[in-house]
Amino acid sequence: MNDPVLVYDTTLRDGTQGETISFSAEEKLKIALRLDDFGIDYIEGGWPGSNPRDLRFFEIARSVRLRHARLAAFGCTRKPGGDVEHDPHVTALLQSGAPVAAVFGKSWDLHVTRILETTLEENLAMIRETVAHLKRCGLEVIYDAEHFFDGFRRNPAYALETVSAAAEGGADGIVLCDTNGGSLPGEIASGMQAAARRLGGLRLGIHAHNDCGLAVANSLAAVEAGASLVQGTINGYGERCGNADLTSVVPILALKMGRPTACDLRQLKSVSRFVSETANMVPLHTRPFVGRSAFAHKGGVHVSAVMKAPEAYEHIDPELVGNTRRVLVSDLAGRSNIAYKARELGVPLVGKPGDSRRIVEEIKQLEQEGYQFDVADGSLQILLEKLTGRFEPHFELESFRVTIEKDRDFPCQAHATVKISVNGKKEITAAEGYGPVSALDNALRKALGRFFPDLDTMRLTDFKVRVIDGDRGTAARVRVLIDSRDREGIWSTIGVSEDIIEASWQALADSFQVKLAREKAFRSAAQPAAATAAADGPDPQGGSLS
Image (cartoon, rainbow, N blue to C red):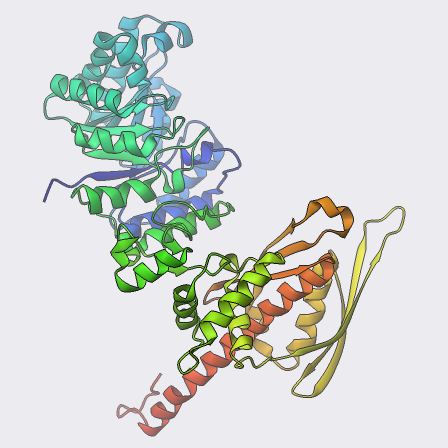
């Protein structure tokens, strides 16, 4: 086994520099605790000298004890011509309470002379003195050599002098940064090897940006060239095109390169989702390892092979990274897809040899009409149950009416009336909403609430509309996709019609049918357990069995 690699997460600092990414101090603390549980070695909490939010984060972080990770505060070297002991940014690092200081300085002579407008010699003194001062104050110091690879291309001798200055100051580790994200893996390897020769056994790290789509590749190339610390962010969030995505870097290191980390890979997908949810960003389905589509199979030939030997079309077992295999059903599906999906969704096909063939033909026809079942497992489950004669509707629509009212000086108001039947009992309700679908959702919840009190745990999380055949203008068919979730899971449903309200109703009704079916299955499973507990009698210690 090769030596382990330390993982340094900068989601809370560099990640927040990404467009539309923002966290409150409290949200940052929640993410930090999640990253600590995941096994991250260093968590960069922010730049305490730059904004009140990061100051607040470090204040509230003092009351929390991290189990594994070390908290790092980010800052810069002292100002040109200044006194390091009275520099406000350096002082902010000390006052943050973090045990680790991550200090960046200039390694590209262009930045020294044209951006900082100082001399090359003064820049070396700024690096050396800042690192030395922080070390004297008892902090672990990681020096980030900003723009190292750009500087190494233009003036390699000076770029290496800057990292030597950090080493002379007593840095515990030096991170070489591809700040502009324009380097290639070979350039990363050359620069890393040159720095390693210059610095001897000092720990080296890599910080790569993704402007050429190579941040992950460059990070791995750096490890192969001697880096033992990798910086990155969860989901690759960061400025411009983002940073190296740790949800790819970490599993590749452990599973492909034999370089273990302290991270629990089984938590990888859940950590990715937690950060994206907190950032209010839609998860990228095609993200490697953790995306919803990372282990999804659609072609019939692929599915048939995967059912026999998963490694035929999967480079790793999805469970290793907390993900799951998904088989999609569409007009590309074969009978293998249907058999797999039916088993996954709990719709038995045993004893019905013609079901798979008939279902394939039905699905292909429906997809010709605009349905897309590979993104709507909830509606697919209902369709399979209908086609096999097993569908038991929890409610049936009698009618609905939606009205939109617009006064000249006020926004639109939507009203919906829904009449449904549950076990032969009729229920009529009306409700308002922010739009017609919201009003329908509210009215249906109100109607069903009399019969099914558990619906308050379900909510709609996404609503998408797409025009299918736009050449027909306003008479075109539309496809509506609704994502719903409760405490146990997420499911998607679909509707298609020339009328957007009807298509929305189809998807909405399916989403409630799925929820009610899950509740029924949960109650059925719980009843035998309760009966067994009752039969066991009271706790011999006199307490309750629960």
